[in-house]
Length: 136
Image 1: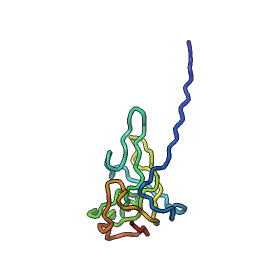
Image 2: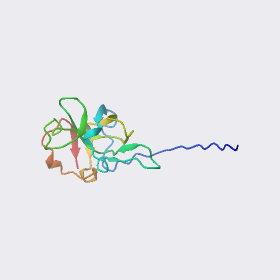
Image 3: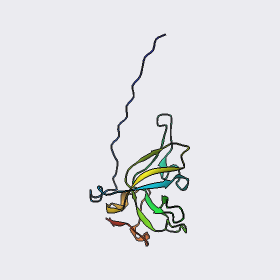
Image 4: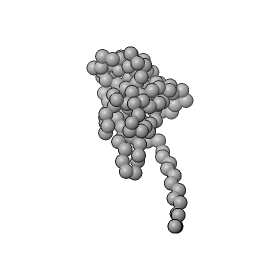
């Protein structure tokens, strides 16, 4: 028998083209995401043969669900509390395909380049907010 161990390592660099300033990076809030509310291909990259985890994209706008305290994608028409913008997902978050929740970092104050938010954003659409975000 010929055993040949293989070592694999992975490194990534944060890709945050939407981040216009380092202001606020030192004080993110820890939140829990309700994975069922997010859409594959829009809010997260699905797993593949080379990447066994799903991965939330940084820059997703978030809102807090009133009944559970969990966070989901901000939706100005939502009636569950997510119509109030609470911040932006600060970093990519890997999670297993069977997960129902994922821990994440919420950027609740800072400066954001709205044109670079995944999926785009018109800041005028945000009419309710608890975040202290300046959009440029």
